[in-house]
Every structure is written in C-alpha cells, then in structure tokens.
Length: 478
Image 1: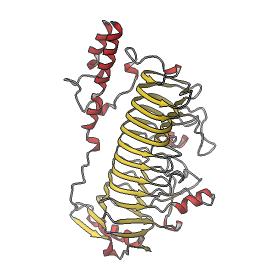
Image 2 (image 1 turned 45 degrees about the vertical axis):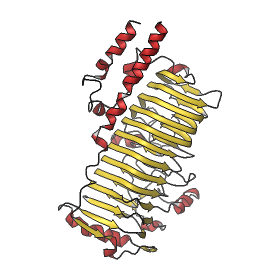
Image 3 (image 1 turned 180 degrees about the vertical axis):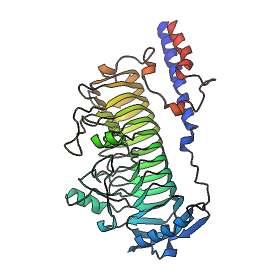
Image 4 (image 1 turned 60 degrees about the vertical axis):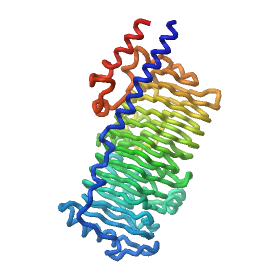
C-alpha cells in the first residue's frame, strides 16, 4: 500500500511542477515592445547610392544613410529599408532609435577584404582578443551605447561570407581575432527578429554588456566544420530572451558568457535573467546550450524550455576551469528532446584556455543549484559526463524525470559533484543517487525569482515551498 501512495506522491509532485512552464509563458521579458511601432522617418539604402549587385562595396552608403537618420533619433527614430538585392559592405555602426529592415530577398554580404572590418580594442572583460593578443576585428553590424535598436525584416539575410576568415584562422595567418556578424555593446532595448544569418566569421550574434535583448524567429546557419561559429552568445548581459530559433553551426548553438579569468572577475558584470525556449538545432563540434567557458563574471537565473537537439556532439554543457572564478548558479532546463546526441549532459571542468599568465589558478568557480527536468533522449552515446574540480564544490545538481536511451555500457561518469535525483533512467551515478523528495526539494533550483513572482501557482501567491506543503504532508502520513 505504501508503494502505491509513494507513486501517487511522485505523480502529484510532477503535476505540481508542470505549472512552472505555464508561469514562464506569461512573462513579459519576451514581449516585443517596439516591433509594432512605426518610425516616423524612413529611407531606402538606394537613396544613398547603394548598388545591390553583390560586387559594389556599399559601406559608405550604409554609413551615410545612418548618419543622416541620426538627426531623427530624438524625433521618434527612423527606419533604414534594404530592398531586394545583394548588398556588399564592410562594417558599419548602428544608432539609437533605429529600425534596420531587410526585404525578404535582401542579402547583406560581408566584405571578404579584412581591411573593411576595422580593428577595435579588446573587450575589458576579456583583456585581449579571444583568439589572439591585442585588438579584434569589429563586427559587420556594430553598435555601442545604444537604446531602442531593431534589426528585422521579412526574413532577409545577412551573409558574413566567413569562409575566407575560417581559412585564415586554420592557416594561422590572422593578426587579430576574427569578427562577429552582429555585436552590440552597452546597449538596451535590442530586438533581432525574422532574419537569416549565414556564415559568420566567428560568433554570429553577440550582445555584450547589454540589457533587455530579444532574439526571436531567426535562423542561423554555418557549415558544421566551420570553426567557432557560435549562434547566439549573450555575454555579461541581462534580461535576454531567445525564442523560436533554428541554429546549425560549427560550434555552440547558444553560449552564455561573462568574461575571461582575471579580466572577467575584475569587470564583474554577470549574465543573468536569460530565457531560452523553442530552440531547435544541431552541430558536430559544440553543444546545443553552453554556459562558459568564459564565465568569470558569473552566470545566474537561466531558464531554458522546449529544446530539441539532433545529430549533435553535446546537448547541454557547462564549461569552466581552475582560474575562471565566477559562478554558475540557479539554472533550470526542462522539456528537452535529444536525438542522436553523443553526450546528453556534460560538465567540462578542464577548459583550460587562459588569456595570459596572470590568472590565479586558485580562483575556483562556484557551481550550484542546476536543475534538469523532463529530458528524453534516443540514440544517446553517453548520458552524462559530470566532472567537477577536485577541492571545489559543484553542489545541488538535480535531475528529475530523465529518460535516455543510451548505447554505451557506462552511461554516467561523475566526480567531484554533489546533488540529487528522482526518476532517472539509466540509473544515475552514485554522487547524485540521493532522492530529491522529500528532504532536498529546497536544494534544487526551479525558477528565477522574477519569474516565480510573476504568476500565482494553484490559488495563491505564497512562496513555492508553502504551496508544496500539502504534498509533503501527504508524504508524512504514508
């Protein structure tokens, strides 16, 4: 009889947790506030002499158009329309209160001449270029200290023509770190939507030191063997929403970052309040969702749901190392489907690239309160490689309702971690065998605070542990 009530208890608990997804869907973080707004001033790039033949360099035309539109920034903003055509350009700056709109047959092509991508200072949270000491090439679409920027259209295309950059990287003939396709710095109120991004030289979309960023309904593609062509990399940014995206690249589809070793620790700007939902994609050399390895400023309050990865190297990865410092905490990942993935969940604590010799090897990351819930997988080689750092504390790692069809005889490999689990198949590794229920529920992270308070579960807005009390009382009398 008690086993029957235990089963009923677990079913009630799972039903209780199902309210979490409903609460997040109502959150305002992912609502576009400016997409329906009509800019009172609009120009077309051809008015500034641009030629869409795929050969003529149009950098000056874009620069002149945006210089002209800047006069309307305090008059409701402006729109730059890019019609059908192949518009070759070098790097250009955006301005505040701007909508850059691409027609469905418009393709903005990145120049294949490195001189058209100026060299700028390294990010202060990195201390140097990510690949090479010194500066870095500026992104094709660039902006800093901006407010209210919309990059959108009728599924137009940005093509970074990155193959030349990949060849320079492989042949080690670069003098500076490769450019991103889109980078916005120190900006707020950013929307990137309804577009296709192809062949970035390096990371594709890189909001850094930004707040209130929405990336929605975009497709990001690069060859599966292209080096480091991450999809979307929020970096020391907060209040970020990524949803309804398809990404297939040569590295991580999404990678959440916050600075590198002593530079990230000193800069101390975390990435936090990040929502990822309805993401589909695959890769060969990276992961679906990554945190790190540059996470020295801290990463927290990340919520990912409704994720589908296929034919990929890794599903979810946390990358860190001695010397990183920082923290990763309060991460909740749910409703994940994996098909043909080599490693479902990976904690890699030996990602030991460092910017220079001045990092502190005794600076250890704090990793805590990471929850995986409702993960299913078919044709998975390894369920989990969960490896912490000896002498460090990777704690409160929680797995709930995980079912993976694993093809190897040793599905889990765990060391230097601590946590809990319930309803996990194949059988979890020893450090995580202790049950979540009923004693350790409060040790497992479920929702970011700002999302938890945005909706009332059941019939009240009392704290989550209070609302769970009836379930625990049921357990008590079994």
